[in-house]
Image (cartoon, rainbow over all chains, first blue to last red; front, side, top):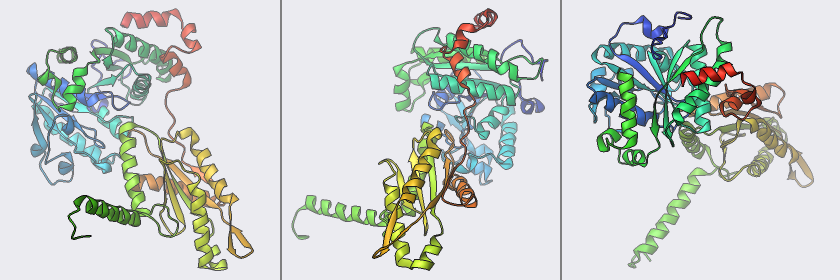
Length: 276
Length: 225
């Protein structure tokens, strides 16, 4: 998948792992490099926006070391991925309906033993995704922060990657580090970008341009001759909006509680671009 | 007093007793530093913080060199004095936010939250030298000193590690320090940021590269924006 990488839409690059198996759902990984940029908030609300558009959506909380999608959605899961991994429960019992009309598969918080990726965990994750994929149109993988082996592995299972970043320099640097690793280790040639917490219109576009500039100069030379540098596509920008905080504190989906506010509308635009 | 209707006083008294018991169950009676139990609690909460906030944190395992020899040569009383003296030296090295504990017979441990990876070796060296400089009078007129070997490891930022994994890495470094001849500090090399200064410079537009970039690059990035 070197020079023959498709260039029609920027989100078509599939990892070898994903291409090897046939399934219906598109698998989209959301990852960020830096924590606390709103990745889980975005996963949940993006899922709600996609569900409103009639898609069957599953959010897989792949943040195995530190899952808190359940906190965000105010769910008290009795059965989690952990029980499925240990064989105590069936996968079916762990898939929960979430407010917003989508399904979630939660890792369960504090599963320290999975913060290091063993071959068993790897196989189990792959098996679970293969099993559920035919039932959904889109699966969002909410990965952990950082560039740990668990994060890189869950991203490698995805057909498409969305990097979530904020205009903060630390977030941009970590997003860049993630892009670099994905380009050099996973041969990603197309990566989506969602810029969260922008304070002015067009800030996302400027950040995308700046990241692309550094990718072209520093990442491209690291790739095998003839390979193109990864193309970063801006999928959307979400404005800094006090209502986001409000919704999170109330443990509500922004798209349910306040669908008309700018941040909610921006997320819906991201969903529209993803769905098309 | 118990018969008197003074609920406020009784609650305060009970709280004092509870605080005293907590203190008693968390301290090492000989040296006065935290004990293993309290250390494990502090380590677990530090892992939480590192995982969520991404701050760097260092754990140091500090082992007194040839402690058995001190005990065998000068007696257990002298050994106890050395332990106390080392504990005092270590106490003088820490910030209020740090955790110092005696985690084994002659082994101490420190948790240093928010310690930048670049400072790890220097921090450990300072601890080592502080101990090396001290002596303790074990019998009138007889002074002895002790040295320590130190092993340290940083928690992986943004990742929820586990206490055993983190301590295991620090222990490996302690083993290396002992192997290399004792009285030294070995710190696990922290994972270097994959983003160079030049890359950051271009990313934030503060470097000379920004001005020297060729016009074609700029054109490309504008086209795709």
